[in-house]
Amino acid sequence: MSDRPQPQPGILEIAAYVPGRSTAGPGVKVTKLSSNESPLGASPKAIAAAEAAIAGGLEIYPEGSSRLLREALGEVHGLDPARIVCGNGSDDILHLLAQAYLGEGDEAVMSQFGFSVYPIVTRAAGAQIVMAPEADYTADVDAILAAVTERTQMVFLANPNNPTGTYISEAELDRLHAGLREDILLVVDSAYAEYVTAADYAVGAALVERAKNVVMVRTFSKMGLAALRIGWMYGPPEIVDALNRIRGPFNVNLPAQLAGAAAARDTEFTEALRLHNARWRDWLTAALSSNALRVVQSQANFVMVLFPDEEGRRARDAFAALLDQGLVVREIGVYGIGNGLRISIGSEAAMRAVVDVLKGFGAPGERP
Ligand SMILES: *Cc1c(COP(=O)(O)O)cnc(C)c1O
Image 1 (cartoon, rainbow, N blue to C red):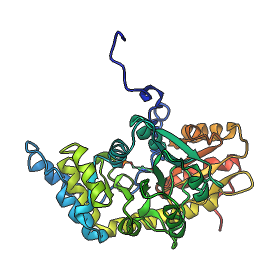
Image 2: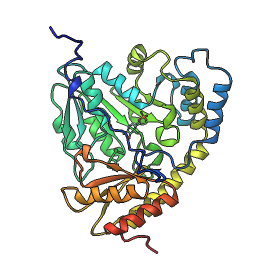
Image 3: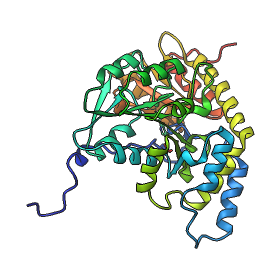
Image 4: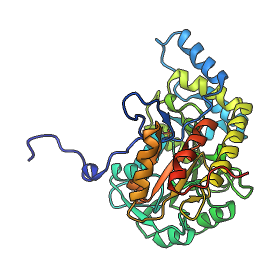
């Protein structure tokens, strides 16, 4: 017997999630480019809705199923609101999925550089994570399918992926699904869907409609509402039912529900974000790419920059040089990419400032 309470097996083997840094040196004005947040703020309509919700009083529990938010999402995305579950961020949804569908002895497959929350939720549920190697920083469908064993119960795919920014096409997603047993749950995390410009991309909703073992997970965090914590899932009725049984009964607060509904309907704002992002993602990619720096083609609201030395010394030096100027980007050594940095797409001024610093590391700078 232990002399104190002990967590479940595996919990203490979990490395806690490392959030993007938000500080620089004393007196240095910080430009945060480390968590893929919106450089244009949020939809003014969403802010107004949150303010109105607070002004209306906070003493009453919110409607527990986030009905108004689900209806707005259904309307905007052409989905059945009854098949949507909302969460306190999509992290909440990912935890619920793992809790409901994974247990001791089970395995969850994810790709090598996949989002770092998947191992956390998997181990928290008592299951094991199995990593499938990637092909040039891109999820490899054949490798994922080859990693499946009889113990596999879940496959996580962030599409596009964080921290690499790469994606797989609709045809590849369909091929992945077609290669999985029917009892394996495929979790398609489309956190960056709003930023994708590739014509052969699919968010995953059509696959959810065709299949019994696929869910699509989405978030408002990358669209200006990270502080409110709003995520959602679209899935088969049976999976929706399972999650509704175990989720917190009031897991999305009232200001978040109403702001989320307003943000979903403000498609003009979403489009403005997409356009800003596509423009500066292209610009930054061109201004950094050279023999000395590789920018991996991104479909998200960040780029991953790779420095030539595998030991990561130049990446660390670049991180420090950026930090000196208050430009806080993300080190991705925890993903096993010690020679890379992840840089969120920010304002024009921020992007120009990043390029100015990285000229010292071989970036060519703006091209005519
Ligand atoms: C940012 C991100 C999320 C969003 O998490 P929230 O809890 O909704 O803020 C989910 N998946 C991926 C791959 C992400 O990068």
